[in-house]
Image (tube, rainbow, N blue to C red; front, side):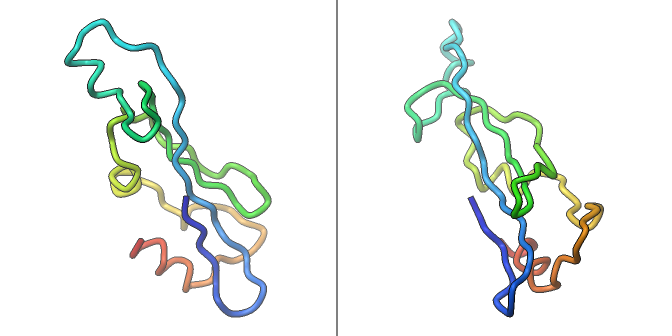
Length: 101
């Protein structure tokens, strides 16, 4: 996963990661290939999760097939971090990092 944080002082951050869960292998060969994760060597589904530094879940994406690369999931996820309600402010450097990574 990614950890975005401000390089100046003690700042809050968001933690971003993709998790995989094993699913039964599909009987249909074409379908099963889409769920096969080469990384885990199993058939999986994936979700992108975003938490704050205290571990509170702020967002979970829709599920993706195991063959989809984590970066593709990040790029396709429609997550508007500006809509989050935090008891603190996200430094602008973190926002720039999230947009460029």
